[in-house]
Length: 301
Image (tube, rainbow, N blue to C red; front, side, top):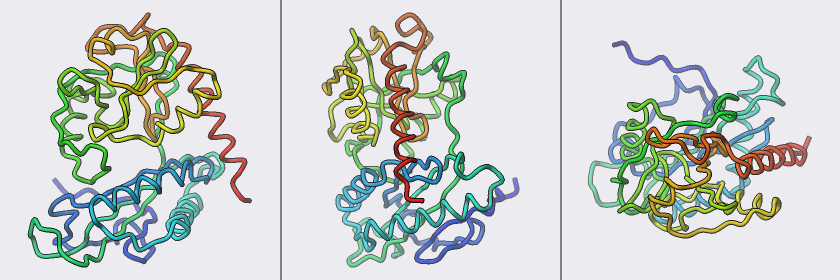
């Protein structure tokens, strides 16, 4: 098969703004050789970076855990992202105020001869790009989505948003092969997360999610859902959640940058609750849309 043709989208690589087809890295980059790096995906609504500070918090935590130096200030990261967002909007026929995007940031340890040990004084490779966000369809929001379950076979440092994603790729493919939107994973019958999203249950009006620890990647929506629950008067708990609780839940929800909050109405072929999106989902979805609108209104003109 011929190699994939990349679209001429704007990107940033190691200090230079260019287009995706022209962006090149060394074959000895440790991101390519080992998956030795971290990444972030920032939603953009109407040219407004959503929850930018929280994404930077997680990027900085990941870099620190991997011992990769961060040579840019938050103001510099914001400048790069906002320039790419503006460049993309100018090159797109859609109304830039209605165009939702995703900014992808990746930082690897950089170029070195292949050796498992971390090289001293690395020069990180920094790559940033933006693209159109593809949100769930209206029918998925209205009717909910199907998921399948699987054992969580990934490593024990799931809290780091690393580019080593083969475990997540395999987990997601389980869902793809079953025609499902997501794969919900368990470690020894305790809920961890989805292949590319956090998983929540609702029982008796209470939103429940797994605790923040090394077994899950704490999504930025963890903090946002806490805020929305507080505003909407929805009780929320973070604690271990058993497989039995998931299967007996009144509602099951997914959250991520692209899914926002999405209802699950079928798991392994069985209905969740009454088989329809529930009232807690409706409240959280409405609150999420209000938070997006507020972020847009706060964006400097």
